[in-house]
Image 1 (cartoon, rainbow, N blue to C red):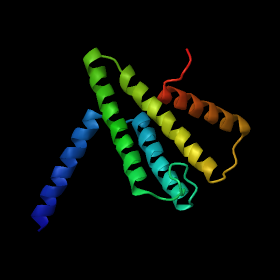
Image 2 (cartoon, rainbow, N blue to C red):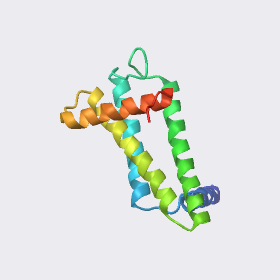
Image 3 (cartoon, helix red, strand yellow):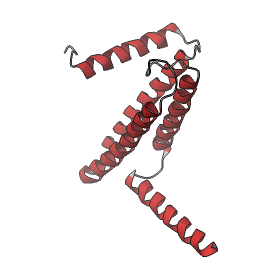
Image 4 (cartoon, helix red, strand yellow):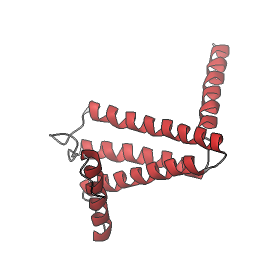
Length: 147
């Protein structure tokens, strides 16, 4: 039994080392992105359990919404891997950091939005910026953005 656990641990550690290499190594930017991803999941679950979610009609928890959110986070990780591969191809470090910065900011906005749904007070300037950002994002998704 001990030998099986040893082999299982070795396989898991090998997979994690490969993933770390594919992500370009573990650094501060990647740590912040993963931290914000975790905070977004936790704050989103809190909002849904308090029945204040704007993602469902009832405002409560739906496993399909959780699956959709986790799938998006997996795609973010895959895009960081793509950015890392592009950086290796081009000999730069711009693509990976740009992808990480974009998604970290997006996750931070989501955490703030979830906190606002729970009634946490924020300065009006932050809420107005968030509303403008969300409006811009909706326009881009609907194809109605103006140049």
